[in-house]
Length: 199
Image (cartoon, rainbow, N blue to C red; front, side, top):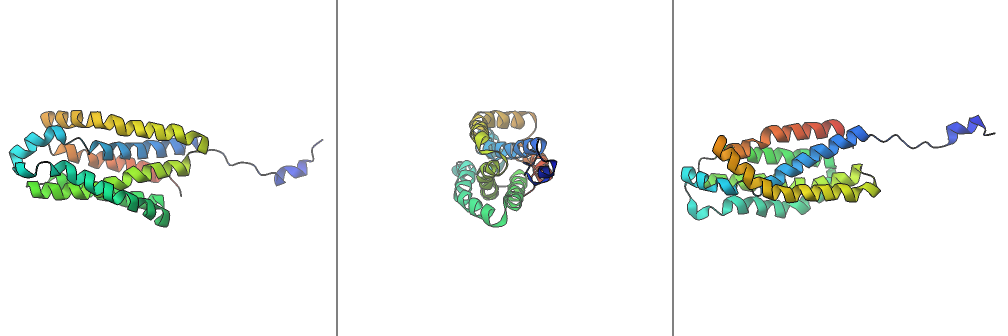
């Protein structure tokens, strides 16, 4: 018969925090969706934006500025996440993304909008990289491939949903809301992340 005194010496694996992990994944999945949508959401709103702000000669930069800055800063966020922690780095990335979204929404000229889009991209680029890094932190190795596949699907679907969402918001609300919508959704996502991700 087993010695009951040995029970206390046998290491017991910690319980899996399934609920917390799901909230983490939902939160960063929403952040990834927002950052991905903003690559294409402006495309169907561009004619309306040009009609109000002018600057047709610089129209392509509304899209390019976001993609360019997000691509440039993405590797930097990976390093910053390693140095200062994923949690803090995601807070910074989301803060920049939301700040850029506010600036985009209040833009009164094409030049202002392009600069704001560049700032927004500096935040969005971090969300692409950090979302996958967080998956590595919270998901067991055998499950990571499945979750990363789901996130890749989110990225792909956003390229289709972006123009549709941009057109719908422009028609039924105002073009400014293609940027303002990031504020409440981004705050919901980051609050969920903060409540569930414990480094």
